[in-house]
Length: 147
Ligand SMILES: [Zn+2]
Figure 1 (tube, protein in one colour):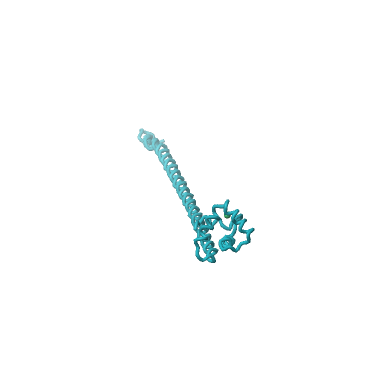
Figure 2 (spheres, protein in one colour):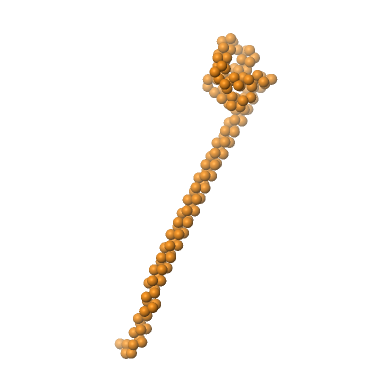
């Protein structure tokens, strides 16, 4: 049987599987037969479902089969949805990790340049005092020690 037909089945507008079985078994009134046939002429799903029902030997099992197929389809649909949700979550997680990595990288380089500049500033501040040594120079002059 066409799975799609069974799923659309029993939605609004279409006769129930019970009604179609009754139609196949000749249990409907002439007026109901006319209604079902008028619907079948314009509904691909129902005519396909009817084809499927005709192939089922024990008609009393049809509602059970339809329910089983509907349940199966619903589970498949749910599985598909949760897979897509999981995929979406995975994309978000990757994006988050990527952003965090970028932040760490930027922070690292910012820190690196700040420390590099501080080191060179400190070197520049220390350099003149280390080279000039005014105190020692003054002491070397004769008579400066007495003052
Ligand atoms: Zn229909």
